[in-house]
Image 1 (cartoon, rainbow, N blue to C red):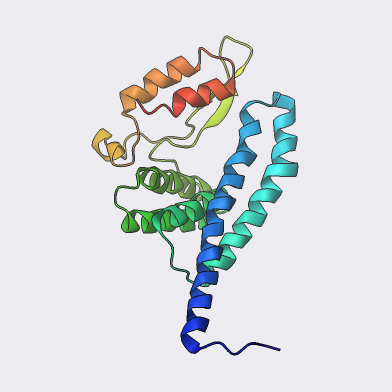
Image 2 (image 1 turned 30 degrees about the vertical axis):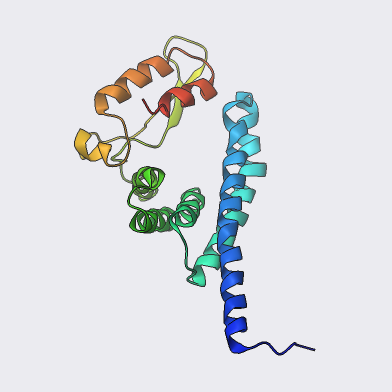
Length: 205
């Protein structure tokens, strides 16, 4: 039998429940990031199997949870919007990337100083463009190719149209200049481990 709560208590209980659900976004984001750690350390012949059997199914579950939560139009803070954006950008469709871009924008609106959200807005735009059959314009999405003279793969921004954005615009996304990109790519090509290449690519100074 249901207890009789005062109306204001019921409202407070409802709001608390929403907040608990919203805060779950941060847990989902932690899971999302942890699932990606093995990609750059596993042997090359095991990466595809890991992605197909572990990462992709997990991404789908997390994405479905985000979609369900966002349908309820919860009140989120900047970090929660950022978490939703990061999870959605790991979807497979252009629509997933478009939603990720919007959630990143929402995060910036909540907190204009949210530097990670500024980067994610542009990264999601690149994913949206790529999934729509167009070139990326920020150069945030990496692919792999064989090193021209060594026996290992190197990461690089494939199908990247450098004519669309200026270095000044890149600053607003917390992205390095074009000259710095070239320097990093040269440095990345000198190390065989993909995890080390990623550290160079993600370097903030």
